[in-house]
Structure formats: C-alpha cells, structure tokens
Length: 406
Ligand SMILES: *Cc1c(COP(=O)(O)O)cnc(C)c1O
Image (cartoon, rainbow, N blue to C red; front, side, top):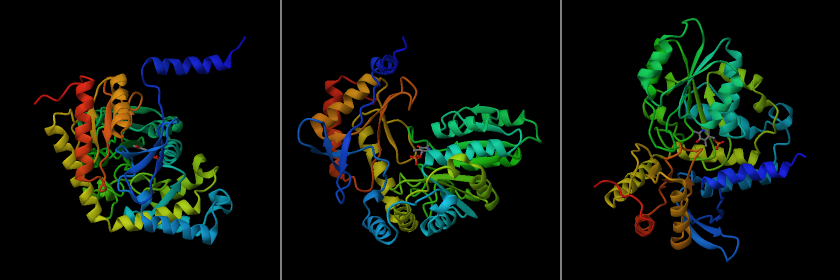
C-alpha cells in the first residue's frame, strides 16, 4: 500500500533530526514604528519585539509616501491587474515603473516580473534557450533562483569558485571562442556580505567575449548615486549586460525586474514562460514600488546612514568578542557553526529578550557555517544595538558558545 502521508512525514522528520526544521515567526509589523513588530507565539498575547533580520533594509515598506501612493492607486484603479501582461494586465503603472527602472540603471529598457526569483529563473532560462550552444559560467554561491534558471536553459553549466577571478579565467580560456558564454553572478552575497569584483569580471567578459548577468538584489536601492546598486557605485554598470533586481527588499514592496538593452528585454518579454503565462503584478504594488524607487533615487542620506549603522554594529559586536564574519557590506553575519545552537540562540533572544533574528541554517548556507544574520537599518538606534549586545552576551554565556579570538 502506498502511504502518501507517511512519505511527507518521513521527509520532515529527516529535517527535524538535523535540527534545521523551519519555524516561521508569526509577526505583525507595526507601521510607523519600524523595526518593531508584534510577535505571536500561538499561546500568550502578542508581545512587542525588535526585528533584526528584515530585508526591508531601509524601512521603505512603511514609508508614508509609498503607502500613500498605494492607497491612491487602489482608489484610482482597484486592486488587481486583471490579466497577464499581454491580455489586459499591463497598466499604466507598469509602463511607468519599467521606464523608471531602466533609468535607475542607465539602461535602454526594463521588464517587471512577479518576483526577483521569477526574474532570475525567467531570464537565465531564456538566455540559455535563445543563444545556441550557450555555456553558462555560474559563481558557486549563486542564489537558488539563478541555479533554477540556468538549469531551465538546458545548456552546459560551469561553476567557478566564489569570486575567484583566476578560476573564472581558467574556465573561459578553454571554451571555444565562437560559442556564446554567459557569466552569471551577484553583487552583494547576502549570507556572507562580501561583494563581487564586478569591474574585473567585466574585464574578463570583454577579453573572452562573454555576456554578463548580474543579480543586484541586495544592492539596488542601497548603493550607487541613484541607488542603482554596486555596479553603479563602482562606475561599471554600463559594462554589465543584464542587471537583475527586486522590489521586495530595499524598495520594501514586492516584485522583480531586469534592466538591459531593448533587444534583450524584447526577447525575454517574448519568450520567457514565467513572464508570459502569469497574472501581472498588482498595480497597487507597482504604484508603491514606483514611489519607492523615485524616493530612493534621492536617498543618499539614507544610504549613508545605513552604511554607518552597519559599520557601527560590526565594530560593537567585534569589540564585545562575538565572531562577526568578514563582510564589506550592510550585512552583519555572526558565526555559530551548528544548526541546533543557532536555533537555540535565536529562540532565547526571542523568548527572553524580545529580539528577533532568524537562525540561518542549511540549505541556505553550507552545513557547519550556520549563523545569525543581522541587518541593521537606518532605524536601528544606538539603544537598539546596546540592547542586542547585552542580550547576546547573556545568551552566549548561557549556551557556552565560542567567542572570537581577542
Ligand atoms: C531574495 C533573492 C532573490 C529573489 O528575490 P525575490 O524578489 O525575493 O523573489 C534573488 N536573488 C537573490 C540573491 C536573493 O537574495
């Protein structure tokens, strides 16, 4: 007899036995009081907690102008797009946001997707199909959505060691000069907080006539003069063929996009299944994203404050002896190295100190590198940081976790 329920339970037991069963924190974010939220533990009354792991990096998800733009959109056009982009679902908001995003990255055109995940999957799989005999060179730490897209392209894939230019070049050198090659990578790797040498990767792409695909999901809104990302900060965005981003992290809303040449955008628009056969993003979300992108184009002060907060967090935590992992970005990872301990720290912080930071375990990061990943925002004050350090100190001692070598 086939026992379907049993199969599901066995699969989940395996995850549980490794200590990496995922429990979602049931939160109500409190508008106007970022980063505070009400936490429901399913038993007692909800209690107020400080959120330390949100990807709403600048609090734009509660920005009054963004909220207002969304309310106005509801009043003007209602809540849903009412169709796919091709069949009645392209609203004037979509058209305006695509123009705004092209301008954000100084590209000819842009294309919206229902999420950043879908943007990566749709674009990389379409590149693989449209470029005959295309070979994709993928950084080993690329996001699951890029891996999914590259697989969908069905062409050969080569994996280069993370941010290792010499390895990338050694692979490129051996490939036939007349075959298309796509180099796929990210700017900020969001679990470690390191940053790719984008300009040097573009040098190699030029030398070997490869096409460059850059996931700037953790860079858009946060880096560069207009918030166009790390490639913009580094002055190399014109050398990157495709920039992919999300509207769900620093921009605080939801949705994904790519920006590139008109020919590329037209091709993806015409061929990508997960762009074509799905209902367009709600115009309400698009209106909010449009306001957020526009606001952050002028967001230099907020970006500077964000970097200052991250730098302060890193120095305060290091001084207190916590094993802060090396990071050159706004991400502040603290090493734990064990899934059970990682979950235990997170549970204790939440239960005893009203601090919420999700444990980051396999498969999000490799086994043995489990960590807490803090994302300080411009709205995390010195008092928040002090409270966190005191709480960590108690929990680290109680659980007898390792401190960094002094
Ligand atoms: C979150 C993430 C995505 C997916 O973006 P969503 O808009 O959340 O679907 C893509 N790439 C990377 C590197 C990410 O971290």
